[in-house]
Image 1 (cartoon, rainbow, N blue to C red):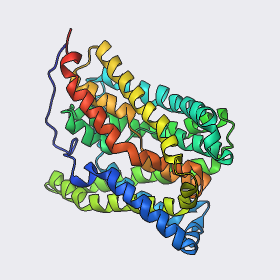
Image 2: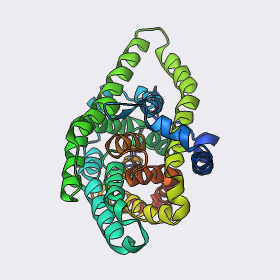
Image 3: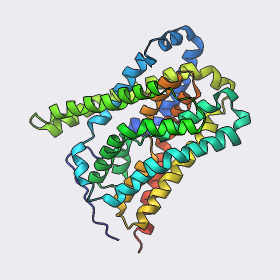
Length: 357
């Protein structure tokens, strides 16, 4: 099995994990505590924020989501799509996992655990909403953190760039139909106008805006350095927007969680299973197709991770701040870093096995 891999790239295809990202689970947990406390002591304030809507879009959350998404989309180089032919096996495996396996396996796990195993311990009126949140979480592959995961496993940067650019392109057209199909199969009412508005607001428009901004940067001298400085400037703003969104969500969800604190653990179970299942399946398929380890690693990680920012925004638009769907998507944020770091460790430690004939 060939292990010749390119480890150079002019752009930030892989960035070291900073202290903030490494301990993101801790910050998220602290924001959960703060959100629950504020929601309990300042309920009128949160109700006022929840009422700031236009066409079912909460304006404060829309601003926060854009602040989260734009820096991530600035990293995407759609010109990297010409590398598709070079890494077609790894890309084929990842596309299969992302679009033909992960959303459907998550829906199945949601039905199994929410309507089955944990049904008696979860509020009955929220069963459908929890399943909807899990489906939204799995229906779009991660856009930003995969660059970090790829760096940690010495992944081939051109493959990572190509795969993310291709997934973002597919997401524009496939996200709404897949979500609509799985919600329909789950007998959950789908407000199609709101779903399409979410796609326009949180996928199409940010992609166009970010790529326009990127194009402008690349008309200037030393554009890679300019882009790198901009990303470093925007990075703290993006993370702050994510954490503030979590504070708002748990401000609305706090009373329900205090009444049933095990809800978070119950919702985490199907998310954990789908991450390990999909990453393991992608890794195994890449080995079967004799794909280099430096491509198989990021393929497995991209196949397993979720675009939770989009999921959170869409859940709020479709079902509201108080919904189980919004809560389920935030659980994905809570466990994203530790579970993906564990997958990184598995991929790195199994390299010798992977490269055996």
